[in-house]
Image 1 (tube, one colour):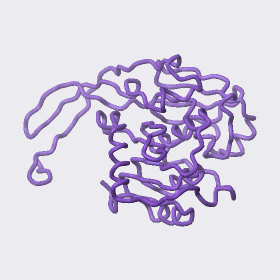
Image 2: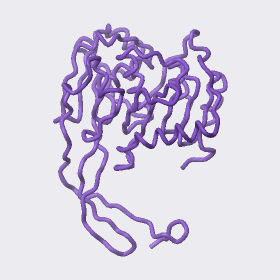
Image 3: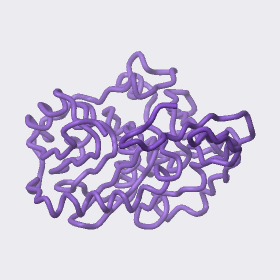
Length: 289
């Protein structure tokens, strides 16, 4: 058995076949604007399933229950025509749809979300929007009709009005650590499953919205959707993400108009250059964790 850091024996996990158990998403619990629980707080139970595993600690083997992240799907339709399917964590379906479309150049008013239909026994949804199908086809191009994963997602070109960001991106060490503690306080799903990402929109020291998802991009799309649904201006805010800061993540930050982007992961070279071009302060680890 290999030894871990400082001689600590690592723990290995093996998943065994079993049923998944999760709570059906109750749309009636959403606030009046359709933007999720009050103050943009994320939901938890619908994102976590129970699996039976065999756990090895050293040479000992035991069978026990473990929390795993639920993988679902969002299907976006336009006036009944299927546009795209996204792999996603359950919940905040309208936020994800609006945020995804926003970042791909399709502006859909929350009032134009025609319906949200829960499918797949609660782990998926179909969100139908009132945008012209042709407009979404032009925006998504070859992606129309396919399932999009994190490896096949791009962001629309930045419009001229988003060439810079409002507010001050100056960060002191004290504020950085304070914001990281804020992220940790909203990381329940990750803490229980180690299978999700989180994104927060922060105004000053207050979290306006916090969302978790199996995709780091989805998590950002959801907080953006929350802001759109609740008419919250995001210029000058801080965006916090648990994921790698690549150029498309910076593009999302730029479209939101945030002044700073913080991650507990690392940045790519193009991510750094994109942030420099946009005038966005980026705070990341200098190596992956």
